[in-house]
Length: 153
Image (cartoon, rainbow, N blue to C red; front, side):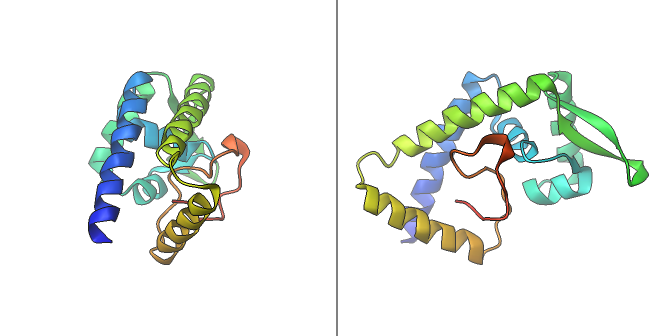
């Protein structure tokens, strides 16, 4: 089981990285855009969701902002803080990247029956939920307006 989970992580990461490259993104930028599809985040919240230290997150946001994909907006609840949000261009790129990446990851299970795919999704969903993994990628099929209360693999 351990080997299968680790190998599947490498497989999904490779597909994710390939998709990101085709959109001119790094994997971390793709992850950032997908996280921001749901809502804007403060830097502290974003660092926690992405598992990045403050300096790494600042560099990631700076580079993504220079590409016109995200913007810093004043936080309405704290005048000293900013929230990171997608720009119009960032929303378009995020949606296209998300749809294409979902298609590619879905293709990884093409050899499974529908019942086996459902079983796999359920089991992985349980592992993710029990380990309180933050939502860094939306449930497939919902796009930017999707609810994020459910944990997804």
